[in-house]
Length: 486
Image (cartoon, rainbow, N blue to C red; front, side, top):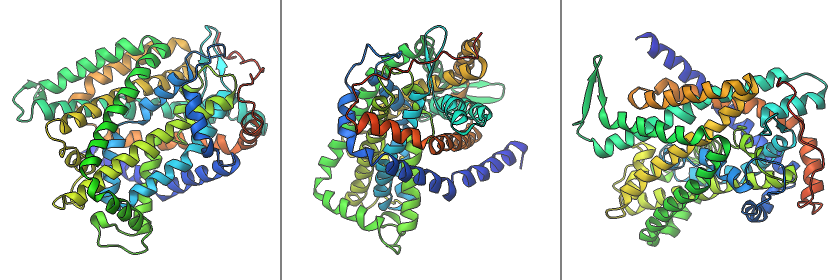
């Protein structure tokens, strides 16, 4: 066993520990706690959806609330919605779909809470840009609340988010695009280059170059450029994917009631029903379903609030409500539709062995039911989802670089980001996947710490603006200028 393999095995074990039962308990506990503290803010979801398409140009901020929402959705509605749900079903049975949905419903409150404190404690740079996120909430909110200087925790969050961006937000996504393009257009490995003893797919290489150019054209324009693209791209890709799901559900209409019944029975069965699609008992179904919901919508991770801080909003609660709809669309809608599509397709086609295939293969088998266009819809969906994730995460990391090193570090970071986009399609990323998961988990801990400490602030703001019917009222507290810039 070589050194890299040993290193990968070590990080894999560490990753399994971090994302094991304790992390699921912490995240689900945070979801329930924030649901209680906000008096079940989920019941305001439809009001929040209406607010999300309402412009607020006279408020402080760099982008519209809808642009902030779609930029956050760009990074959360990703390949995990397509492949991850299939993996949960393959490992936890049909019941995992319901548990995934339940975790999404409770996760709305956490997304609301973390976005509220991000906007509440955001700052303004000397060039007029808004910056915010868990790092500012910890430094300016938690430290003031406790009387203890927790800036070191804020720095840790920014470092973890920065490293996560190179993996899950960059290398992993461009590698996924290159692989799907190579599988589609170069299945027989006809187009290959031999370089320093390595066989490199020409299709994968070209894919990397095209992605790098497209991303560079967008991210060097800053958050306004990124948000303009996401504002158009995210609704398009989501609608395309949902249409595909609706077509499949129409094909499988005769087994839909059986599908819903199986999902509910499998979710709450106290004994295994035979494994596979039938399920492996409530504990396994809950474990994989809850985990997939938590990983998919990023509620509690602290990523989406970074872009929420840039939104034009008259008060913290108004933008927090809008941001919370991201979890609704990501998990409550998209993940649920994916789950229904896969389970109904497996019932309709018993030859699909759910116990022996990977999650991506389950989704592929489901979409293959649509003649001629099923597979292309899935391929285009994966490409668009992965590309949008790159754009969203590039801004998260830009904000972290600005926090850690100031504005002079942003251009070097973006150059490095583009270089990784070029390299990732032609390299093996097993260890990068693992490290990304680890840094995502490490981001979550300081973010939840901030939410728990600032829970009284969250409750106070919610009671005043939301339940006091003051959502249209401006918060007259001026946004402070960041103090550490020279």
